[in-house]
Length: 147
Image (cartoon, rainbow, N blue to C red; front, side):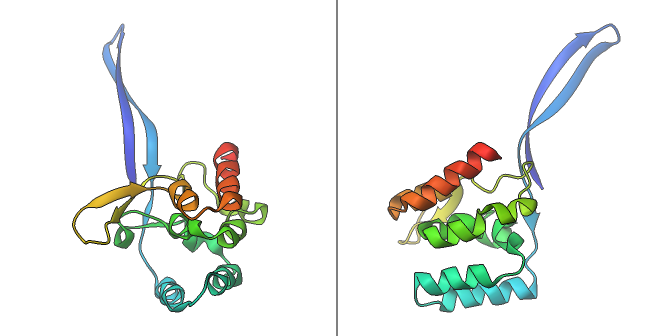
């Protein structure tokens, strides 16, 4: 788990007291064999419809919310934000039990530039806007407001 915390010091009768309050947390997961197979299947999809069908076929969508070191701390939900159908499947109310307000799934991800030299930061919101996915953007914003 990666945690960014705010430190503050308070003077009390017993001396100085230092406390830490978490501002932001990201939990990093290990990739399982099943998840590797899903990744391979995503790579082999030839259309957005095939990607959406693959996302909807998963009995447990938690995999798409996890952050992996192999993705530089990113999650698949942010990467799939170019497709409103996938966002609808992943952010619908049936999946609320998998959302953990302690660990956000919408945040800036480090993406390597196509040229291979350098990186830029991009979030699910940026990806949805870049792909003109107004419906997907609405779902992402609804998620942010709710959680």
